[in-house]
Picture 1 (cartoon, one colour):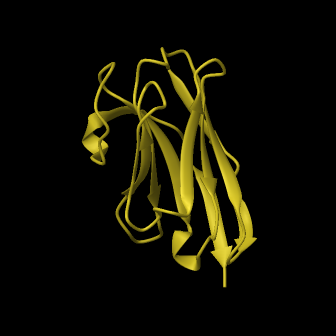
Picture 2 (cartoon, one colour; picture 1 turned 180 degrees about the horizontal axis):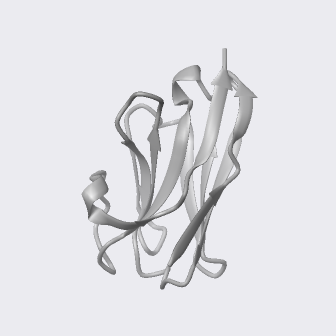
Picture 3 (cartoon, helix red, strand yellow; picture 1 turned 90 degrees about the horizontal axis):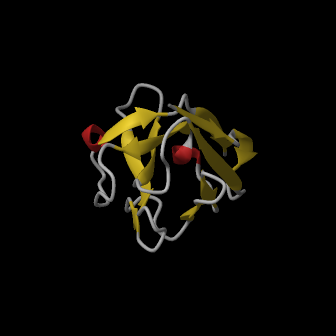
Length: 125
C-alpha cells in the first residue's frame, strides 16, 4: 500500500499550490482520504477530508474558504487546492487513507491507517 504526496514547494504569501495524493496497491474509492500537516516543532494537525464518493468534505477552521479537497476515483488521486497561502501554512503535508471502507469523515489521525511520505510546503512572507 502506497500513498504518494506531491506538489509542495516554496511560494510567497497569497500564492496558490495544488497538492496531489496518488494511491497504489490499495483499494481507493471505498475510503475517506484526508490531508494532515505538521509544522516544525508542532503536532500533526488535520487539514481536510473527503468522503469516498467525493460528495462530502470537511475542513479545519484554519483553512476553510482557502483550501479545496477533491478526488478522482478513476485515477486514484486526491488533490488539495491551496489558495491564499499564509506563512502559517508552512508544514509538511501528508495524505492518509481511512481505516475502514465507507467510513465517516474524521479529523482524528487515529482513524487513518495508511499515510504518504509527505510533501513540504513553505510559504514566505
